[in-house]
Length: 604
Image (tube, rainbow, N blue to C red):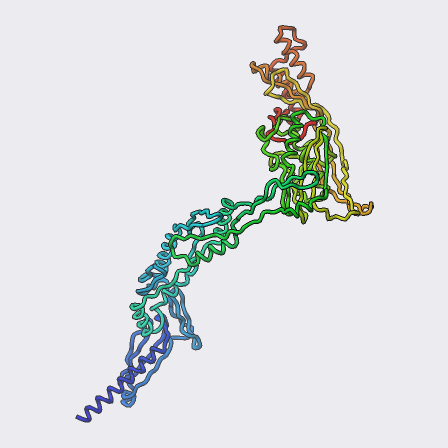
């Protein structure tokens, strides 16, 4: 009995020691289910092969009774040459004697139970399914409303999708797939049991497209910014009088607001949000001290409009009045077109002559270019920064060659910037003797022994030749109106700087080309009888003014029942005349243009 008990205790000890070694061995291993390794354990007289992969467990026969009575452990990696590999997930791993077993994730594996990404359950899903589930969740978040609070409490509603919300930590899927699917069997078992008690929740980290956020913030500023209002002043008797006090403005601080939104969306929970944008005060500019300093004349110029009609004179006076009193602070840009437009009767304009397509036509605001040209010369003498200036298509006479500044809608504008360190004030007025004056006041910082003047240089001159005959279908047959020819020029304007009377600098300011335009005769072609209109058009197409005059004389005589002075051309003769004219000219003269809709130039 005692011998039997001893035998039982001995065998129990062996079994216990073998189980302990078995547990310690596997708990020390970190081999994935994909490792190609073989292990053999000898306990209680039996060899048990333990392996992963496709190998089967084998029993090893004990070499002796002595061996069968002990406990031993043997293992080896691989069953072939070191170059052979095994598949792990979507890749093949090759092991060598010095390399650790590779741990990989298969995208076809399933995520174990009790695993979440934020509120999204991932259990039982493979990589693609889990990714789709999270993307579906993100798609729902894109519809959530975000309220932006900007200037003066104004609000706008946008969606998270408009902000370009996206998922920025997709690597959590790899971690989720590894959880409970990697490590040794004991570690995996422990992980699975732990998850039953405390599920694993991977956080979904969100962010937004910074450029989309910036665009939204800038749009908020455009809608709700309140610009500051600078004091309105007037210069009288050599001093400035404040007509209206200034007031501060408020605007969205774009950079700071973008940072606020990006931080708020990093912590986005999927619930509607209200985000307050950063609003900064913008101070009104101009103080009594500034006005007191602005007593120096920086540049001045005047021109005469004594030959102008009453309507053109009215336009010059009106444009000058609209510019008078302009205050420009350092860095401010001034646009003449913006200051004097729109060219409407309600804005004080009359119909007067302007240049259009080589002709002088009637347009609202005709004469405004004399205003801009006079101001241009004052700006040059103040040595302010000229940003945009265009010469007229044809020569003007109220300023020197290349000293003009044309205005024609937004295509031709005169713009300049106050590039000085102090504010400037523009004073403009007209006199009873029909002269227009512009003076620019500021703080003079240029040396007293320095002077600036300007020289206009004629580079070339092209005399007008021939006659240009155009059809005017707005006027009746018999109407003829002539416009004088315009000589073509190429000119340059030069700035000359002298110190103590000695020239120290000569700079070209601009180079201007003015086209040559021959004498132009507009001939009316409007008639109830279409054949009469065609006869006049045929005469115009000949390009010969005498033919046009003869045709009109014959038509007028026929209308009075008198004998014609010259034979009226037949339709065939008219067509022949047209063909001859087309052969002699590059193109048939165009129709007389309709009146321009703004002051695009000056009549001569």
